[in-house]
Each structure stands twice: as structure tokens, then as C-alpha cells.
Amino acid sequence: MQDHSTDPVWKQAIAGSQMLLVAFGALVLMPLITGLDPNVALFTAGIGTLIFHIVTGGQIPIFLASSFAFIAPIIAAKGRFGLEETLGGLMAAGILYIILSGAVRLRGTGFITRLLPPVVIGPVIMVIGLGLAPVAVHMASGRTGDGAQQLVPYDTAIWIAMISLAVTVIMAVWSSGIFRLIPIMFGIIVGYILSAFAGIVDLSPITNAPWFAIPNFVAPEFSWAAILFMIPVAIAPAIEHIGDILAIGTVTRKNYLEKPGLHRTLLGDGLATSAASALGGPPNTTYSEVTGAVVLTKNFNPKVMIWAACIAIVLAFIGKFGAALQTIPRR
Image (tube, rainbow, N blue to C red):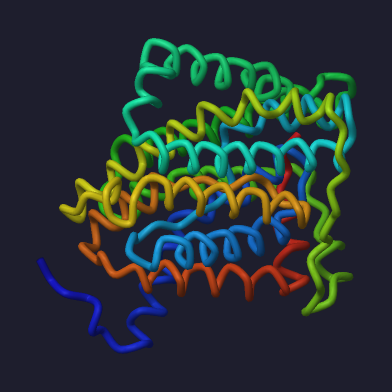
């Protein structure tokens, strides 16, 4: 096993940018689908990753970013409660992680398996994914996420959506190396190019945007209705987090459930999610794509993820970059 901990700073920075590239497609796609600001998502992914590494002592090569498990609930909650109260519910979900962290510290990890066995978690994750299916169909058909308004002609939208999906599947199944880890990004790029040829991309926001701008942070508001709506959704990502910690431990041949401990990783994830929600960003989760990149590069140095976090924070303040992301058609 090659030791990358002694690599010069410039090599660590390059490796960090590569890890961010792997996570980037999914990182920005989630806020684009849910109507959140991708620049804020970049910033909160960076901040969340730094919080996680501070809490866990910088021992785990992990990057935290937008959680797909919350897409359907965020869309539903925004329509019902508004953005600010939805963010309040997401902050409560992060607090649930923190409470779970305390319970794990007091009782160990066994009670989680007894309380939430795979036979329970599996259907919950399936329901989350199936709940998003109607939104995907509406958007692929050129309508808004709720299907209320037709924004792009159906024939144009469905052809672009199907070709983008095909490219994503092909890259995920038949490509190799680093390309296999970024199928979503390839799908976005192809879809963007096709949309530009179809005349449904407006580039004027990029021209009008400043080079440097503060992300559009949004403060949360709190209501019991939004909190109670969102908290049950947090259970499945919390269990998924445990699986990701086990996976990266298998890759690095270390038992992270014992050191730094599952209670610390859950605490780091919970604090990162609450911090993201406090600023208007999506909840954070560990990214399996990045774990795949760690396997591919054999670079187990956690400092690489800190570099990825710092680069994400810097990109969040580039106004034209955020404007370019906002021009990506997603309906």
C-alpha cells in the first residue's frame, strides 16, 4: 500500500480536485433538482466536510455532499411549507443524527441493528426512490417537478432526457477507471449540449453574473409540521451512513466504527447537515463515488478530502460558475 501522507502539498491539492470532480455531478444535481442554490450547496459541502474531519480527528478519507435521499421530501416540503421551514426540518434531521450519535456512544452499535434491521431499512430506501419517480418523469417530459406547467415541448424534452440517461448508463456500466465514477457528469454535459442546440439554454445569466459573489444563503425557520415531516426521512440516510463508513473501512483496512467510532462519524454527519441547513444548503451525506475514487487511486490520505472541501468553498464564491450551473435545464 503506497503511503500518500508524505506527498507534497501540490500533489494533495491535485488529488483533492480530482475527488471533487468525482463528487461534482451528484453534488450540484441535487440542489438543481430541488431548486436550491448550487453555489450554497458547494459551500456547505466544503464546510460540512471540514466539520466532519474536525469531529473525527481527520482520520477518514471521506467527502460529504448533497444527499439524494432527501430529494423527494425536499420538493414535497417546499411545496407545502416553503423553503425556510423546509430548511428548519432538515436542520432537525441533522439533530436526529446527533441524538443517534449520543445513543451509540451510550449503548453501542448493536441497538441500531435491533431497532432498524435490513428488512425495515430496505423498504424505506425503496419508498424514497420510488417517491422521486413521478418528479423525474415530469421533468424528463419538460414539465415542472409537480407536473403543473409545461416548460419545454414534450418531444424535445423527452429526446434530450433519454439520450442523457443512455449516456449516463453507458458510462456507469461500460466505461473504466475514473470515467466510471462520474457518469452523472457525462449525462449532464451531453444533455446541456443537446439543450443548447435545441435553443432551450439561456446564457445571459452567465454574461450578467459577476466573477465573484457571495452565495445566496437562506436562514431556516421552524415549525413542528415541517420538522415532523422531515425527521422520519433522516432514518434511512443515517443507516446508509453506517454502510459507507464500513465500506471505506474495508478499503483502507481500518475499523472506523471503533476508531474514531461510529458515534463520532454520526456526530460529524449530523453537525454538517445542520450547518448546511442553517445556510440554505441541502443535507450532507458521505459519497460512495468518492469511496470508489479512493479505491481506484489508492490514495487513503484524509488530507486530500480537506483539499477537496477547500476547493469547493472557493468555487462557491465564483459568481459566473454558479450562474453557469443555474443555466443547466432540469425541467
